[in-house]
Length: 134
Image (cartoon, rainbow, N blue to C red):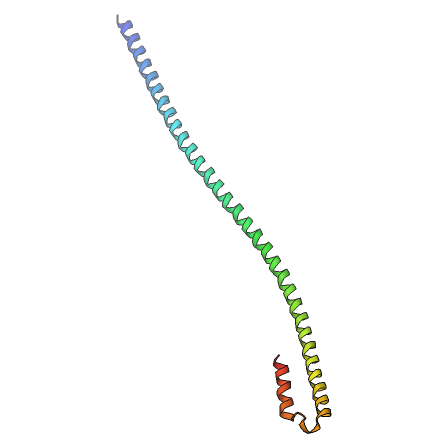
């Protein structure tokens, strides 16, 4: 009987140890599963953040390229405007010179036709000033 009781206690002890080990393993598995879920959630959050930042970066790069293109266009337009301004300025200077020459011709013609009514120096200066201002 004593041997039977010892065997029974040993068996109970082994069952208790196995149950304890099993409970510990189950708790460890549950903890691992919980940690795994937490890590999956964190991974998903990080993926979403990386995707968001990547999209923002791509948008920024696109805007930078658009600005570079606009800047190049502006530089070309500025060069064209400078060239046009130079041409217009040269043309205006030539026109001004022609007007002054024409005023001198008219002064000479007028003084030849009407010596007594020739333009005074003051009147001629006023005409030249008007031509300069034009």
